[in-house]
Length: 444
Image 1 (cartoon, rainbow, N blue to C red):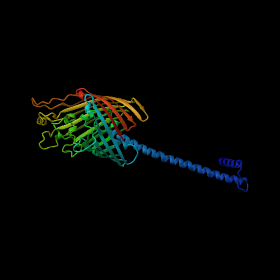
Image 2: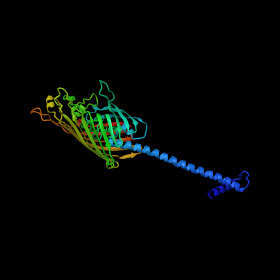
Image 3: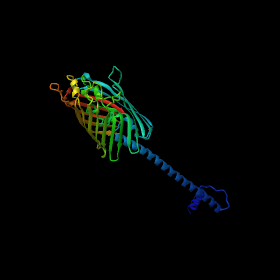
Image 4: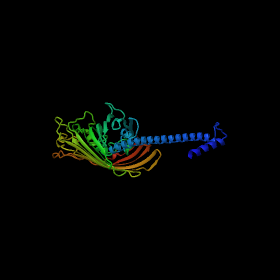
């Protein structure tokens, strides 16, 4: 009936249009021909519909595959706390090899001595990442600090990261090479677009040395309940490098004896572990620990049993426009009594304990397409020489004073890759350090 109706409709249409059919034996034969054409037309329509459904299914499968790949990589990077530019690029479906970079240029003007104002190309970093397949990748970062690196300049050129990582089917990952230690909030997320303030906070530079990396082997994993973990065996610090005649150890005890993968002494290896929980949207709670001996059985060194340990607890909460964070870090160097006797009378003996903590609050005050303004305030306390080991009478070392720093500033982001920064810092103990800072940074 449907075909006959369609045939009659075609016949009427052609007739109304003044068109004529070739002469046939009769009207019955004509209708048969038209019905045959209508049947062929119905067949073509059915075939087109089937092809369209098949195309839609293929497209849906492709989109699901890309989405799953991107979601998996993004989850892995978030669980690892790795906000570096090279790893972030791997979270999206794209080319196997990715070039990334970040950098910052800063200006600082002391409040009480404008003659000491200075500008500095603090760092420029080039990153490379390459996926050999969906489970194996390489990550490398090369950094230049303070614009010029030569024997007569203060700049440095260094390999910041260089490792390979492989993922197993159960979300377990293994990596080997030179990589960042998962301590605190900043060490693995240290691009200028990732933190507030022109310069990195004092706790995560003086107590937790930033950027802190070691050579070794590590495992990490993440779970559906929001828990992620890291554990590894790496190189550690070299206490034989301590220079009691210089102030570097007072500024940052561990930065002064950091080996950075450069012909690193490895008789004594260190272990580290980190645990983070992201079970509530916007909330991160975590802790880390690092420990290892630092004498390396060196000949004539009197503190081969000294052990260096550093631990921290941290939290970050980002409800709506707020960004709230807190961190406490504490370090210990054991068995320093005999070593400090050899340093008697020098300005920087080896401390037994050092610590720091901060509270920070930021609020996205204004945002529009491509721009945002986020003021912040941070208060921190740092003591790089909180205590010393017992010394004979008359040789006791005076403990360091706790410095208290308040920082008030703002970040103005242009898109997600560029940030303009400004802040005012006030120091409680040494007001000569009060200063105004300006900076520009980028990351991609």
